[in-house]
Length: 180
Image (cartoon, rainbow, N blue to C red; front, side, top):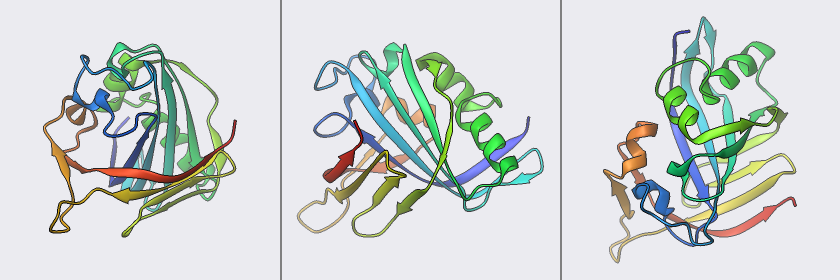
């Protein structure tokens, strides 16, 4: 059950700005409930002898309140370019079934998993990061910057420890389309 992945991620939230769930269980989502997507761009990785370099996974989930309150429903979208072995390993890792920090994290906050789907996943970085998940949805982000043009970052937020993220750059969602 040994696995290791390294890469970049993007998180999208139903709240207007900065998902309050990152800050801890006291945060209240804008609408009283939380819906989010986490896109993972695996630059390097391996799981039980299967190389995962270049793979992409998106976790879409909903919670009836704050993320920390649990009772979430989730689905994984794995890029259709992944081999069957890669899809199996990625699903195990990102659904928290292969141990490690994601097992404890997702085991605590997600109680219903919908079947994973293989779809085209596009994650693009640069000045305006974007994510497109098949015909499920897409968005383009506009990074929040200070007056000198430096990225506005968050470090030390409660949920960052669960994801093993040291810091994150903030962005606003300027354009999105989601399937109903």
